[in-house]
Amino acid sequence: MQTNGTVYLYIAQIPETPEYRKVLPKERQAILDATRDERIRAQRYIAWTTLLAGLKHSFGLDAQRAELSKTKSGKWVSAVCGISISHCRTAVAAAVSDRETGVDIEPVEDARYREALLSRIAAEEEQKLFSKLPVGQRIAVLWTRKEAAFKRDSRNLHTPIDANAASRDIQTIRITIGDREYAVSSAAKNGTLRVFEVRGEEIAARGDYELILPSRQYSVYILRCAGDRLYTGITTDPDRRRSEHGGSKRSAKFTRAFRPETIAALWETDSRSHALQLEARIKKLTRRQKDALIAENSFALFGNTIDAAVYRRVR
Image 1 (spheres, one colour):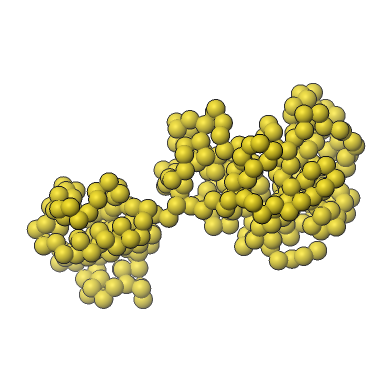
Image 2 (spheres, rainbow, N blue to C red):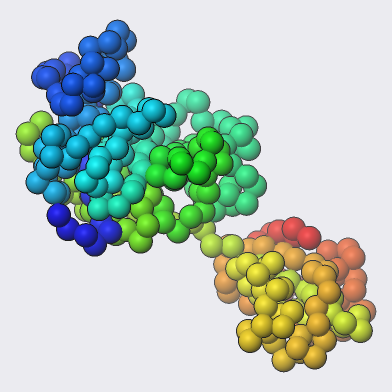
């Protein structure tokens, strides 16, 4: 079995009338036999057969050699490798890896996806990660990332809401299966990604997907430092940068001489060039103008040289 951290992601469309066959282990077959809702039974069956196909294709393992079992919490695990399965109404996803993994799949457009749902599933900072996506797609992406992280880390988490959607160990793709688009997220430590589609007995590599990356937020900050002096800079992590200014090797010469006390003002933007532009213009202001900017957030100080619409005052 390969041990390079790769996540092998297998997707499949759920047929209208699946051709059911017995599956292993017996505990999984018993669950299928006890499922009375035909729609849910089809989802569970295709998810499981897709997982089995993935184990065979990636690692040459059948259900017995993979030593598949169900934990007390209801999670299916393998004693040999990392596994995870997910299903929605029309498609399934299964992930296999040489380390623990989690996977989740959702359609990118769904009538249930309303803006009010964002605040229920994600913190404000997480919502900003994919701010350029339409609301429906943003909900699908955030939820699959949380579910994938939860499935991988469920020993330490209580619910998917507790999972960190910003984790760098989560990869999210948008991919077409049949005639619908889906968001699929997989979580695995330091894992690269390979994607396949299972169609009956055939498995085909899929490279025609879009990797969805978080929108990077750039912050322009003004620090109030010792002696009531002001320092302006840009960063992607204001609290970390303020800490660095407090005395690390990465502090600026100015803040080594005048230690920072508080963040006096903070603006966010999606563009690094916009952040650099605002930083440069603030540095050209007089002290009186800087005080006015901090107190009133008045971009009129810059004339027509700054587009206020691309910045958000957050402190």
